[in-house]
Length: 333
Image (cartoon, rainbow, N blue to C red):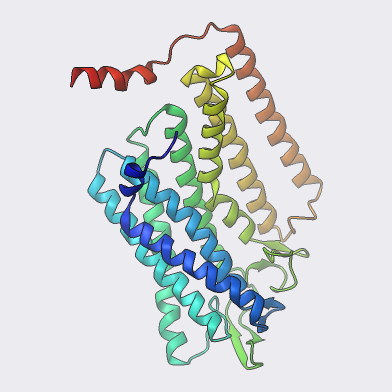
């Protein structure tokens, strides 16, 4: 599944503008990480813009590539992509500006005019990003994109991305102790109305991600869900590449079934990490129940994959019908 320059030019333009802007933000934030010593909760003020920029580059480019491939409701899909692009620019733009100001973007209830207006726009943006992704996921159920494996990868990927965004609503309300006080990069008091952690305050987490190592952290399932589509498309690409050497993988049905196993296992990982976080348990310190859930998920996916492989190796390989249909249509034209 190669990408030509002509195909690249057909990608969703507003989303690509967003991707270009996010790429610039990643560069600026990278410089900030090196030269700006200001910190919030023992982390560089530029760490959050950097992580959000990288995430939106990956997810935005995936949407920009995918949406032009859809054949039904193309205008609606284009509009939804534009809504996502504009909302992403506004939301991450607010995060970057707040970082430059040396203060918090999330949960900040201080009453200065810029923050008060920005918080209203910022909080409504979560609904916009989630809503656009959810509608795209639903509409994908009614159309096919390429071979079955790719179709199911895109459907499940967008659905899990929407689920990951839905977790953000719980992040906002995860502080059960009410508002708390913190300090900005200049030592000024800031009133925060929520936190990422469950059962523990934010700060002092894992390197790079800053996920909590002492309590639950809803950013873990949020991240896993948001980037499911890249994992699934990568699985499709790997299976397609292996099909050139492995005879039994040349069947579209076999590749679709193996892609389904990947989707099942990854969805299980998302569910387990969400359950783990909601119980106030850190990712790096799972209890016996979490290990049992992980073991059961691995066992089921491994058995299903093995059964598919055994059945495929015993079944004579037939030419893929999906591979000859485009040629037939081309000849008829």
